[in-house]
Image 1 (cartoon, helix red, strand yellow):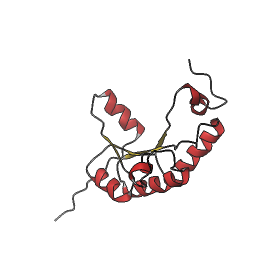
Image 2 (cartoon, one colour):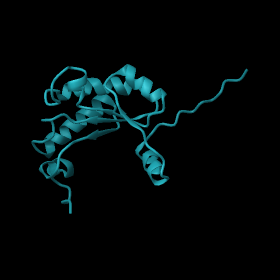
Image 3 (cartoon, one colour):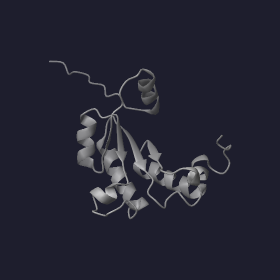
Length: 141
């Protein structure tokens, strides 16, 4: 009996862009740990968000404010170890990017290097525009 070759197609930014262009639905769920991430990945979820809501859901805090960058890295690394296919996005926690663009870049670098995640998400408006564009990037118009 021959083995069936089941190639797992990893979700990348290019795959997501093609799905959007083709009008395909893109699924996304929040995961904070290895076990749930494995279940979601095996179920074919396209994107897993490691949300700062881990502060509420996993640690029992009333808000997302107490979660630290180190704690987000811990949760994100657990999720990344579980997946074979899903695209993993990690929230930058409050206080790790609002100060200036260098702080935002350093926090992003830590998450990407220490977790293997595929992207980061930050929240805000004009008050964080420097963090988004960086000090040497052209201004948004």
